[in-house]
Amino acid sequence: MKEKFARFDTLFLLYLKRDWKKIIIWVIGLGLFSAAYVPAFEEIIKGEGLAGMFETLQNPAMIAMAGPTSVESASEYTLGAMYAHEMLLFCGLFAMVIAILHVVGHTRKEEDLGLTELVRSFQIGRQANSLAALAETIFINGLLAIFIAGVMMSFGADTITVEGSLLFGLSIGIAGVIGACIALVMAQVMPTSAGATGASLGIVGLLYIARAGTDVSNADLSLINPLGWTYLTYPFTENNWILLTIALIFSAVIVFLAFALENGRDMGAGYLPVREGRDHAKKSLLSVRGLFIKVNKGVMIGWLIAFVVMGAAYGSIYGDMRTFLESNDMMKQMFSQTGASIEESFTGTIMMVLIAMVSILPIVVVNKLYAEESRLHLSQLYATKVTRGQLYWTSIGIAIAAGVAGILLAAGTLGATAIAAMGDSTTMDLVDFLASGFNFLPSVLFFIGLAALALGWAPKLGKVVYVYLAYSFLLNYFGAILDLPEWFSKTAIQSWIPQMPMEDFDAPIFITITVISVTMMVIGYLGYKRRDMIEGA
Image (cartoon, rainbow, N blue to C red; front, side):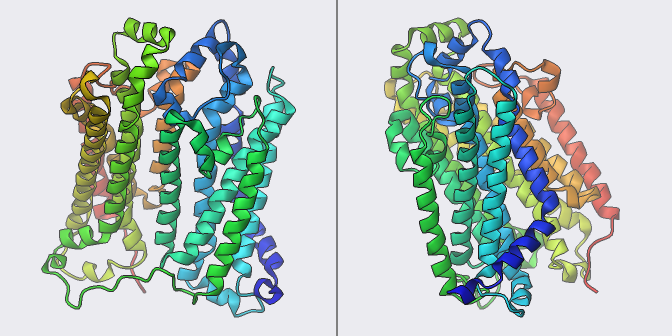
């Protein structure tokens, strides 16, 4: 047994030395995002802020997004309770995603690149690399938990207790550990690193969607969800430490499973074999469009299925809204004053979430062109009559088509499921849902434009577009809660677009953002047409 993990400690120290810059950004970046909003939340609770937030967050839409709270009345809803309620789930999700990318990158991706084979040529155990990568991830999440707790306690805010701060930080750290363990298993099961990353993120997405339904209908059912063991710890209120113990036991079992799977497979192989291709290629592959559709088909199908699942999951919650509204006088009064029904309010909020998810797929498609270029997969095409314009505009066209299809499926599935759940009590029809979704089309085009701009002039910055997407989503999600200045909120592209059906359609804004997006695509093409391509020696 020891031979399999021989000198993992050497690799562990080597990884720390190699990744120290990433570790600093990881811990400080996610740590400050998780803990540094305490002063802002202190401003919110002044006056009747806590009571208003408590009632607002009982909305099924908010429960589906942020999770439930253990507090049963507004008088018990403290600063600490509100902070954990609003922040813990999303911070835990970010910790899981980052850990997944890190573990897959250090295990299966290095294996695909041939680096693991080089390492094993020395006196290194067969599974030392996996153990070292996992140990590094656990170490980083431990630092993250301590940093978060320290930052929260440093503010000295009322009800932000030492115990609650430690539990809050450790809950986020444990979420990262769970993500790492899931990634380690998928790295053994899937045939490629891309498949391992996609499967791991898909599992996290399914866990999030599943908990959205159970949180609204019966929060106790969320306790069987591994994601629930992180945010249902209820820091600053119940301080439920036992869930972290369950999470650690679960992680240990998953780790043993991962090592057992790794021990039984050949290097470079997975338990799910790569599907063999056709003996003869289709005629469609003779065109650039057919080739690029083939290259992107897997990721597009996966994401489009995810949009359907998410739309159906959120749509099923609409059936609980009328009951909730009729049982809560304050919320009934709030919606009657705004002039919008609870269904319309929920649709405007959820559609913003769905469109943020839809925006990821077109960015992936645009960035895929540079990924294929950097892997030298396009070198043979450069010697043919295929022009750069064909490569560029075909990718942009597929990205736009993917975005339109994503909006159609997400909004359509949300609407169809919601109408079925509400029955005769519905105040909306399918056209309202589709209009609400396609109202955000300019924002999807804007992200395609940003990705195209990066592809043409600075392709290595393509991943920065994901950062701006996450920034825009978080600014829209937390903007109303934190009462941010309007000029600051406008730094997110979605903030310019009215949320239908609560607000009216704004044609000038729709056209302006669309024109700006197309302009960025054209400017990106000018850069792509002139820059040097990566070619083999």
